[in-house]
Length: 144
Image 1 (tube, helix red, strand yellow):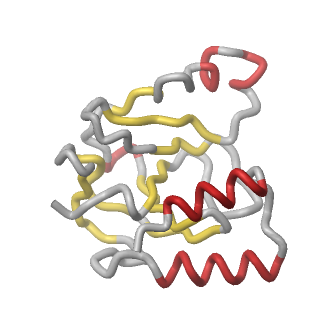
Image 2 (cartoon, one colour; image 1 turned 135 degrees about the horizontal axis):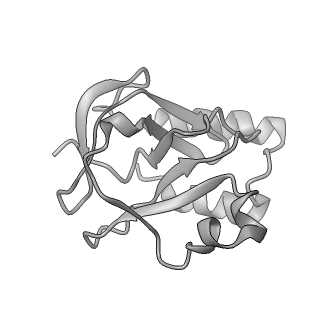
């Protein structure tokens, strides 16, 4: 089941603040239960692709389940793709009012897939994301 719509609604309503404990537990369980069967939470060497067939990464470290979804974590050394800053998100890097405070840089791949890849810059309280790691939703990548 694709949970991207639910993730988006939660983010809109709670603005990426930690969910109340009961909702956090409920949604984390839901997101974990809806991780595609071919993915392993503890990581794998599986190459991952966009829906257009572009290679995103060669393997991943783990899947992080937080208040706003389940995300695949990977490092620089697993990236053959050319990520670019998503259109309209340049301010996260170029505008000093934001660049020093953003939690992530929103990246994508120029292949028409509109994939959203995060380069995490700071830790957050609603998930165990690590600064310097890349994240992509479990529902935006494919094994082939």
